[in-house]
Image 1 (cartoon, rainbow, N blue to C red):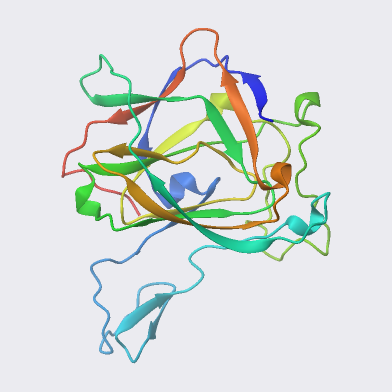
Image 2: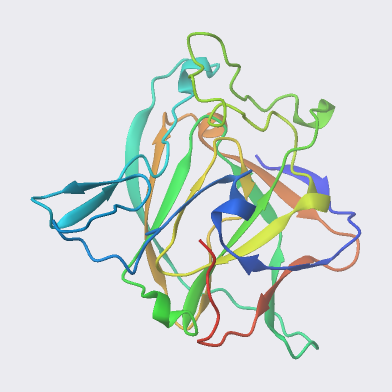
Length: 257
């Protein structure tokens, strides 16, 4: 059962930015080739950072590009989770019109969700970055508020020496609170980028914008207990919806690594 929250925020139109790791770091990881101009070869003299040669010098292997985390050991049910890999075929969403000539359309956000005990990685298939004019996807995220009585029934990880790791960045979980709508952010991703939502990160369900669907392979942990696998917050607005402004595209747009 989703929690309902009043979306009384200052800004109703949120402008998107191109997805990049620097801006997204609070919420998770952007996965993409950091050196697309480098052709794998056994004769490469200087390897890109975090890369090693593989497959007899015909490949570059970038190490630990994202961290998959399972915090179900601290879930109330104590039911063991399994690693799962699903496919989502996501059709393009309808956008509302905008009076701003620089905006291609507006996407109204009516619900956010989180997976408190697991990371979740979305990997797009078969979409070239050169197709950004035709199709891309929208990543909408929000940090958590401080806990309150409204969210006291929502279970979240309680880290102990047994469940925590040595990676402080990985275990810096957002906590139990509901999404902070005054700090909601939106990013546009192209076909060369996968994205990992950190455990407990509030995000919108996947939003494809453009002319055709995108197939995503989605990797996470799950134990089959609904409230431990996924928690939802429905946004109740008093007047206008909170909308993400999707810009008009040109082939000159560049994605920052």
